[in-house]
Length: 512
Length: 125
Image (cartoon, rainbow over all chains, first blue to last red; front, side, top):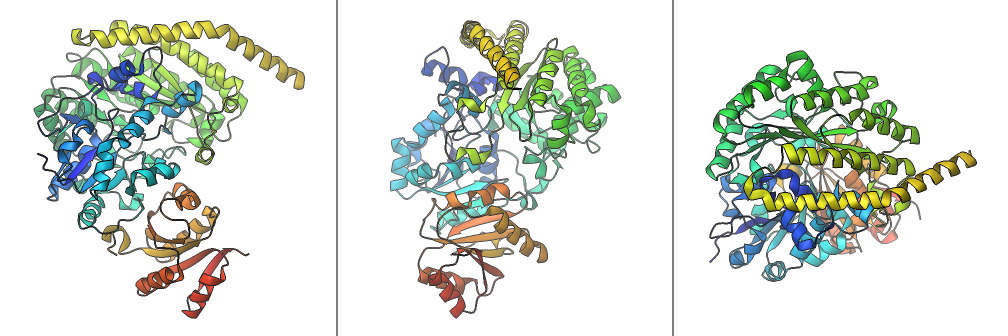
């Protein structure tokens, strides 16, 4: 019945298109709140259409890249939906698993876990998938299992599971240069290395990066790799900067269109740096890119990530944001979604951990850069989902206060702001890093501010922009119920939290 | 044993003999860095000789992976016995390699001395 020797897969939280709304996928990073787990999973990661062989119509972009590399090298490989793996048990010799967040150690899963003290559904879903009879059967048949993807490092903290499930090799980093050889050796029954970390020097060149063969989730396509900003908390920045040629991008978009995916998410650590002069965005490549895509794509365009400094510079120097929104994309969408990183409102801390994040502006101007970028986005219907990081190394209470002050300045601008906790990996060892005393009172103040901000604007975004399609009514309803539940809970708990904060402040004064 | 040609053909090879406890990652990374820089290499293969088998030896060496950002690293478990060590050293004889002992252990040290192979000890017993 099956026909693939090399099968790539993941659990349901990954093999889903999240109702065509990428942002809903983030619900899988938390535990079920206010609704039963089944409903939560349906909201976050509904099953996806598959063909007769169990191949999903859309699949995660990282898996698509590996699949493409293997197919181009002559392997009989395919991504298979987790519910359809059994069809390939007789032919499968290598099983490759990828994930953004296998064990929920990444952001924002770890924050939800820490706050609610409950395991996020992505972790539960992955563990349940790996415990399923089909995986056990595959191992009994001698199938080699290779795990990879951006969360590969998490296996280093889950050695019991590694052993229990019989993972043969774990690969971390950009895998294009090594995956063919690794799979070939697995097929030949050779002993595989336990762990492979592909360093920046072995990153693939543009020519070595294949064009995907099947559609990616929600039309995500990569426009560049690497980032020049050098923030201390980010590993992407170590990788060389590479811009995908426009024709390469368009080829992948055509693959998506052929499968009926009408939207595009442009993936990069900083979309506005596509074709940039260092950290200074240039109008010509960005306009050309968006014009070319907009000609072939009937649906909307979103950006995966953009930096706030690039948004400010792009608009103030070249009017790029308003030109894109008002002259190129105006007839296909009324908003554009993007993830941005605020991380901190403290100038002192930004100088230490992300001195180039504000470039070409000086780090002293970071809070102004953030506010200006938020204003520009608000005026142009660009809706950011922004992150801040609490508990960074060397963070002092006054840094968190500055972050809280910046949040007040951002209140008038339509956006979602999510707090994340910096989790030193050393702390993971004892699995007690979720303890509440890791959160200080100033953190709670900031968390409450972000919650208020996001709840206020979430309603506005839902009413004006999001999930307007009639077929998404049940999802919209589910999300409204969730938002109302969070509001109700927050209001109920607020007096207690505020009392706690006040007592904490008074105690601190008395001690001082 | 087949190697990953892309990463291992032109790599520095390190035999890490572990007993128990955590490897001081900064020292090992420093050592790898020193060797790779002097030989203008970007890759290292690390062979683990230890009583603690795969994957549990990563408890001792994961900081080495997490604290390394510059170099490609390949980890291979090479067994625990003196015979395993001899076999590995014979395989490596035509390649640039170095041996690090987590701590001074006569069983392994004797073999290395007999074979005339220099080694570094991270912790004296």
